[in-house]
Structures are given as C-alpha cells and as structure tokens.
Image 1 (cartoon, rainbow, N blue to C red):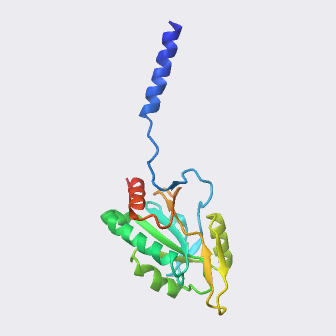
Image 2 (cartoon, rainbow, N blue to C red; image 1 turned 120 degrees about the vertical axis):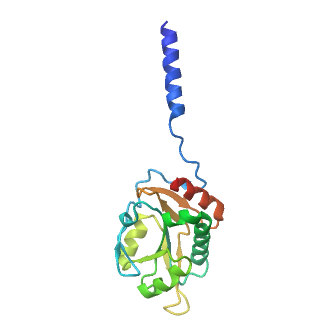
Amino acid sequence: MTCLRTWLAVLALALLAACGKAPPDFRNTDLTGADYAANFALTDYNGRARTLADFKGKVVVVFFGYTQCPDVCPTTMVEMANVMKQLGPQADQVQVLFVTLDPERDKPQMLAQYVPTFDRRFLGLYGDLAATAKVARDFKVFYRKVPGSTPDSYTIDHTAGSYVFDRSGHLRLFLRHGQGLEPIVHDLKLLLS
C-alpha cells in the first residue's frame, strides 16, 4: 500500500508539473530573470525626462548606437522598422528606443531628425557623458571612441544587439544583430500575447 501511495504521489506531482506553464520558445537570447538593465534615466529629443516606467504596458526594444554610425545602427533601425511593419496593428504596443552613445555630436535636434525617419513611433534618448556611461554600464554595453582623421570624424565601436523588456518592464531578451526579421517578430509576438 505504501508503494501505491508513493507512486500516486509521484504521478500527481508529474501531472501538476505538466500542467504548469512552459517557458516561451524564444529564438533570441532569453535574459528572463537577469539582474541588470533594470532602468535608465535619460532625456528624449523633445526634452522630456524618461525612465523605463514611462513605457509600462508596452514591449520596449532598446538599442544603443549613434547617428553617424556607418553600418550597424542604420541597418538595425531599418530592421526594426520592418519588424514594426510585420507586426501590423500590434506594433502600436511596441516602443523602440534609440539611446545615443555619442552625446557630444548627437544633440536633441539631430536625434529628432534621425530616429523618426525609420518609424515615426521610434524615440531617441540621450544623456550627458556621465549619464551615457552609467546607462551603458548598467546594460553591460561596450562602447569605445575610435579616432578619425579629424577630432570630429571619430567612430564608435559598440555592442550591436538590442534589449527587449516585457510589458511589465522586466528584461526578457537580447536580440542579436543581423539575424533577420523572423526571429525578432516571433519573439515580440510571444511577449505581446
């Protein structure tokens, strides 16, 4: 009888475990439960102070770059604009944030011209040098100035992926650069459902 009770208890536990919610089948790097990138304090190109809490209720994609970037930044922004098109009406529940790593050249007017050209819903954020360094450190984003032929012609080497937060403001994903639309659309739809 004891063996039967034990067997029934094990069966009951197995059934309960099977009824539990399976984790999402993300195609990108799952960061659920990560203890970094919890927030930021930056300013948008309209002069409004912003934190992650301002976008609660939306899925938020955060990309770090700069407007004079010759390759990764514009291709990422085009890719995200195409993701928004593929999402259709659900795109209004997604907020893409472009955080500049070049506050010396990327003034609010520059961000206001550059960022919305990809999608009118995209928003550019900036801070001074100290705020930029802090948010990059908080997100574990690498960036480094690479001198050019003149003092103003430098480039910036930087992390090329994007971070995704769910509607509750929890960090969930790291999107790898250059993977194409399908994995991003797939994962954003999972977070939107």
